[in-house]
Length: 196
Image (tube, rainbow, N blue to C red; front, side, top):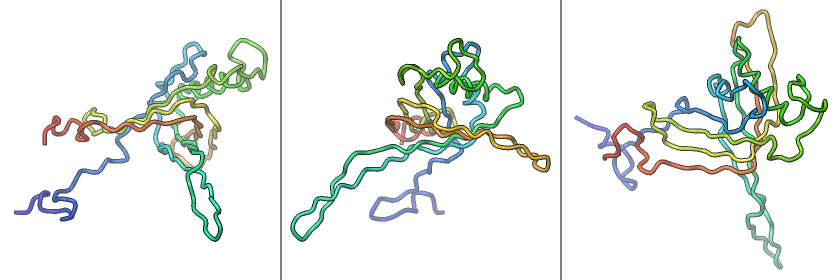
């Protein structure tokens, strides 16, 4: 009888590793909408449905010499991530998003005390952290992305349509300054209790 240990690529060793699955993840926020009383970012975590992971690119710097060109890496930049949130009937997720936007600039509901259209004095007044965790299906974390210096770059509240009964969503683009990617030490989550 064949087992998974019989399959694989000879040059890489036998056996097939379980792939990470796209639907096992969670996203949490640190300091989002912190200035708005009664608003919690947990509502966004609860209603999140899709998310893009951080993508990194480097500028290409050409070095010209005589009859050749070589290239070195220049400055790096991170692309914004996209987050889709279901707009719940209670409005709690939308309230957390609105609270963050109001913290960045007071322009939606005027819920914060102060001047209308007032902008935060520094980025630290409104920036937040984002933690994206890959899960193994048994509450074990297989990887963690830590995004620093986050702010909502754009918000799309979607549309309404009498002929469409699907869930209403809010699309967010979140810009950030830096990301760190951490993998678990053993890479097996809790399935093997760390034993191979």
